Length: 224
Image (cartoon, rainbow, N blue to C red; front, side, top):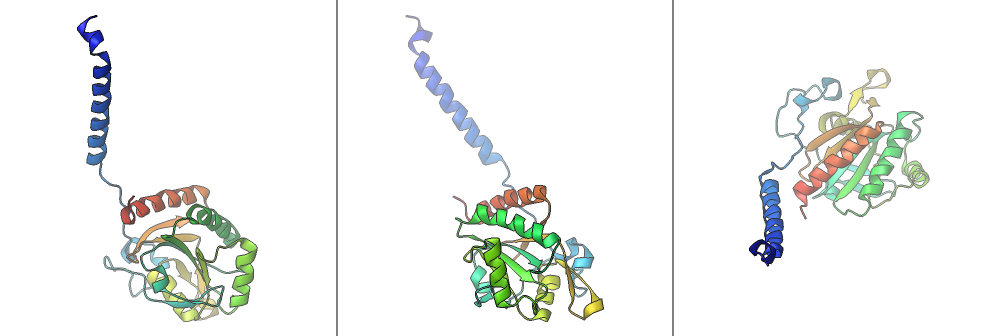
C-alpha cells in the first residue's frame, strides 16, 4: 500500500476542514449589510412637513397615543424594542388600500411567529374609522390583533405623525388644514424609532424587498 493510499482518508478530512476554515474566514471578512437611516432631507419634500424638510440627522418617530381596533390605547411603549412596519389607509378606500392591505397580510403571515416584529396602520379618516369600524375591517381582513394595530384618533395628531414622523403622506388643503392624501408607502421602523426603509405597498417586488430588508434589520437587532 502506497503512502498516498495509506493517508487518503486523513487527507480528505484535512481538505474538508481547510475548506470550512476558509469559508468561515471569508464570511467573517464580508461587510455586514446595514440599511440606511432615513432623514427628512432624504425624502420627497411633498411627503415632509415644511418645518423639517432640511433636517439631516436625529430624526425619530414622535410619541403618540391612538386607539386600536379593540378600543385599546396604543402608544410608542407598545412598540418599545420592536421593529414595525407602518402605513396610512382608510377602511372605505376602494383602490390602493385594498392591495396594500392584502400585501400587509402577506407580511403578517411572515412575521406572525416573530415576537419582535409588528404592524401599525393609521387611518387618515379617523372620524369615519371608529373603533367598531376598524374592528369590523380587521375581522373581515384576517388581522391578528397581537401583531397588527389599526389605529384611529385625533386627526391633527395623525396628520402630524404622517408628515413630521413617518414622512409618508401628501397634504391636501381643499378639505381642511389637516386633510391628507395617503400614499402607497410602507415604512420600516427600527427599535430606536428610526426609519430604515420605504416600500411601495402595491408592488409585489417591493413587498419582497421589504421582507428581505426586514430580515437584515432583524439580524442587526436580534442576531441568532
